[in-house]
Image (spheres, rainbow, N blue to C red):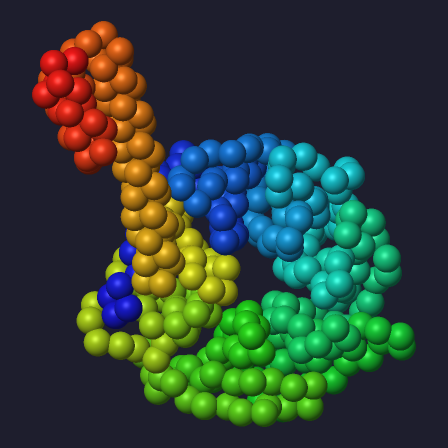
Length: 342
């Protein structure tokens, strides 16, 4: 694959994978009703079990939101402990997104959007109509979402709530917003990258003409990556070389890590060339420091042996040991003593 992204480790988990969330220092993954945190080295950190299957995981800086059956739950990222008892609505929630400054926003499967605070307590409920997907925040007040008709809607969630369709065009699919950018698929199958605003687009550029069936797309430090319905992972726009098999679920930390999974539990941790280089440099530094530490300890042992040999009158042995350490002054001193018949 162009760019030399690498699978650093993988796990074959038991059960059907329903959701994955990628962090800079690990992965949160749900198999059935079991949610696990796995470190960036592939070690299992904690596990939490829910009554119903988990189908969405979204993290902020301290907690992870879990959608399971009809409920919304919050877990501590550090320990996996639940925050509160969770909240539920008839039919469950469709999506979840953290709010700038703290809190959460969730559309249900009807025509309401629910706002929660950091601890998962309900604040208020809006009725913008049926929302298919939360795309992302344009700023602290304006949330972009895709409705059931394929329109992109801007919801103003501050003061007096309001909403508007940013344009009349309908889209077949949309990615999450990342660094102000998103991918959309037109009804003719083409893939475009756009920079949206509350009233339309700052820019909109076609990247792929036809032939792509997206499941998910993520943006990293070197651009967009798309997971398609055939389970392939490749750059957008497409690059030379074969796409790699990844599965049906894709997540990213928007920088240098991706996580993918097949439905039957094959989880992969992908690292960017830059992260791989940083890890290699850190490893070289640790190896160098360890060599210096071992060398210093060995020199200490030799020096003490040389002093013991000198104290016991074994001057020839002491000269050899001091010579090994490069201590020429001690070597000349002992040779002078030997010449004097000492």
